[in-house]
Image 1 (spheres, rainbow, N blue to C red):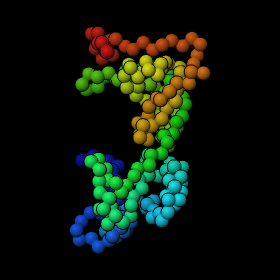
Image 2 (image 1 turned 180 degrees about the vertical axis):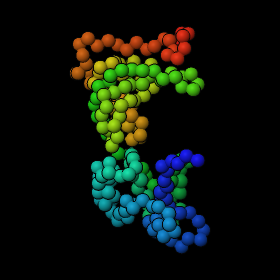
Image 3 (image 1 turned 135 degrees about the horizontal axis):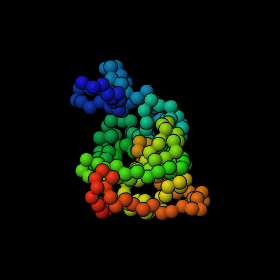
Amino acid sequence: MSKRPLDCLLYGLVGGDFKFSTQFESLEKAREMGFKAPKEAQLCRSIDAVFQFINHWDKARHHLPYETDGVVVKVNSLFQQEELGYTAKAPRWAMAYKFKAEQVSTTLKEITYQVGRTGAITPVANLEPVELAGTIVKRASLHNADQIEKLDIRVNDEVFVEKGGEIIPKIIAVDLSKRPADSKPTQYITVCPNVTHHWSA
């Protein structure tokens, strides 16, 4: 069986026999039982402390051994969690704070096209390599012809790139002030790159 670099961090324990009464106690119990729990978790006793924690990790997150796109703030008391309950989609006692996605600019060198297993064709931006959120980015999905037209993306453009959810690189805008004078609009392909017959978008 192939080895994969997977790991697991517990953010709480659920069960009828546990004696703890707070979320933070459940993390400590998880560690005692030999599970990995995030050592970065912190018990905050004021809203100011919560914002200090968020502001700290907005910068320090780049030094973590994994990627993260935000902080989850939770009510510590399990009794209060139960009293607050859930909406149809989420607990009322927890809130996710998303960091602003990091952006960089780089040059779009070429647009190529990938054919998926279902035959769907995806345009791909091949970029001048640039560091973004701790990794070197060389490629970004352009999704489809509509996205290329909407942003008016062209070869040799200076483009702004960010990671969607801090994972998938995507082009979000073009720096029109740096567009070459001889720039030409992108002509989306009409022939599938893997076969000889015509393909229409």
